[in-house]
Image (cartoon, rainbow, N blue to C red; front, side):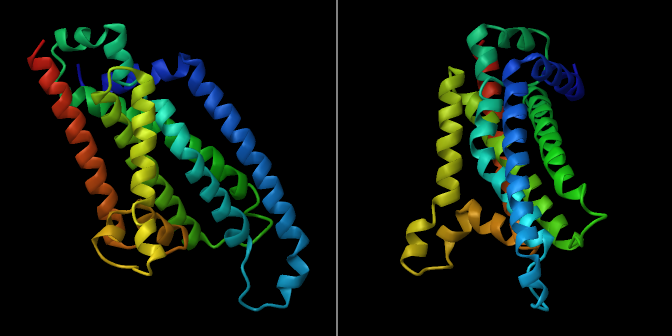
Length: 251
């Protein structure tokens, strides 16, 4: 059984799970409502901004803030989506079936991760369609929007990897969801104490996810920020694979 087969099976499972549909419906409805509010505020202040030659535009006041709201919701959505990926299989007693089929732990983890990531990217694409629908009627800063989108893609990929890792170590989906939420929030805010003390550099700030997401949302793309997310994703998936491989060896 290949990685793509595992990913396809997990994708089909997502499609028949009510939770995935409920999360999609509720979050997109909320994001759509907030998009309407952001657009109304933008249109209401358009005359005042016309006097400012370098004032913020549609991208700064509508598109990027909408993506920022999606980023906030991802801290809750991703743990709920990933909690049953491995912990649910373990709790239902179906994980040994994959082991018996001779599927390596790496393929199980990667296949399930790719299915979750595909759902999240579709969620992001549907959110992006809201400001893109007005691209013909307003001026979009495509460079800044592309950087912000890259930041969201990397953030969603990292949160999904963390969720899969937590699900790999947990014995119950609820524990996996709680652990993923706690770890993600800790990574995001680990440097709050340093910032309150006026320290804006150092290792503690480098460890914080917010340090690497916020520049991308402002349109600043750095290879160091991209590398941070790649390392986090690789580490999370490696831990999940190691945990599953150990469980496979012990039967």
